[in-house]
Every structure is written in structure tokens, then in C-alpha cells.
Length: 173
Image (cartoon, rainbow, N blue to C red; front, side, top):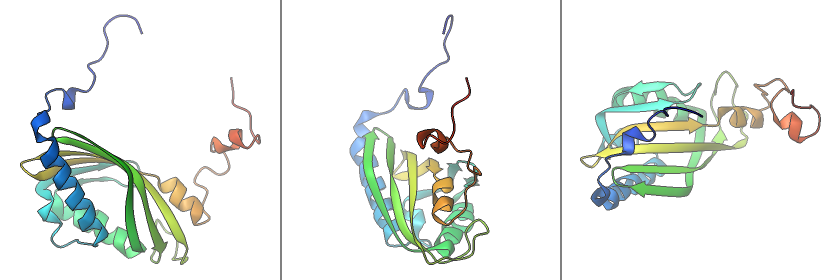
């Protein structure tokens, strides 16, 4: 790339590294709360006005109530016996990130798929900003195509790039 470059990492450029331990405590408590299936009192970890910004299929939630009503409750209804397993967590000042998986039973309607009773793996990545002891922003990627494939739905109709890996298709040049 020649010429000027776009600013990188603008949101974390002025992070206060002295807040790393406090951020870690909030995130670890929040994950424990999710594993305890807490919904009503999840405000212990999230600010009332927090933003939850998800990938396509997840949507964007403005505020704690919208997060509870349009994410937590439908997710709990679709998947039971959920356990959250972070594979790795990173902490830097007011920022934290994790990737991992949830293991759950598909016990309710999910994206139009009737309950199968199958155990599924729900892979995710989360990026959080913590201010004054509460999560105020959460960027999330949930691998819904992977979840749906476990339920017998191929959202890519056989044209996902895994076809290259299997040797069924050749990349176009």
C-alpha cells in the first residue's frame, strides 16, 4: 500500500494499562455468570447502556434489556445445558478478548431449525471494553454457519471454501 495509511487500533490507542487486573476480574466473573445461566441479574457485569455488536445472524443490541430479550433469552430457549469454554483470554487495560466455544444441546427452535436434541459446538470470539467495572461494549463473532452445519443445514449450499480443502472445487484465478 503506497501513500497514507488508515489509522490502526484507534479504539485502544489510549488504554490505561493500570486497569488490566480490574478488567480481568469483570470478565472472569461475567463468564462464570453466563455458565450459571444468569439472565435477570447480568447487569452486575454489563452497563445498562452497553452495546453488543454481532456478526450477521446475531444482530446488534443497544442496551442491557435488548441484549437480554433479543440474545440471551432466545439463545437459552434454543440451546440447553450450555457450557462456555474460553480457549484463550487476553487482557490489556480496559480491553479484553477471548475465543472459545459453547457446548450445548439443541433443544429449541434455532434459525428455523426445529429442535434436534443434538449436542453442538458453538464457536465464538468476543472483544470487550470495560469502564467503571462494567462491560460497556462487546464485539462478537458467533460461527452460526458451523452450528447450522451440525444441524444438517449448509448455508453455503456446498460452495463453501471447504470444497477447496476437500479437492471438490478449484479456486478461481
